[in-house]
Image (cartoon, rainbow, N blue to C red):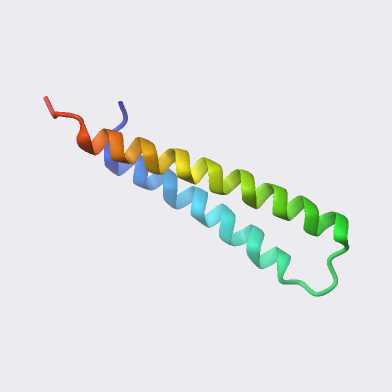
Length: 65
């Protein structure tokens, strides 16, 4: 299993990606197709981040050798 610090680094990257997508969605001239693609990407990114959070929880709960 991956160490918690490595998983937190992965989570940081995932959250940074989500931040970029949400900033892009704030542009007032985005067509609906682009906004729909952003929403889908954000949803997928949130699911990935949720999975990473679960991995962090499991790695913390594991006994260390």
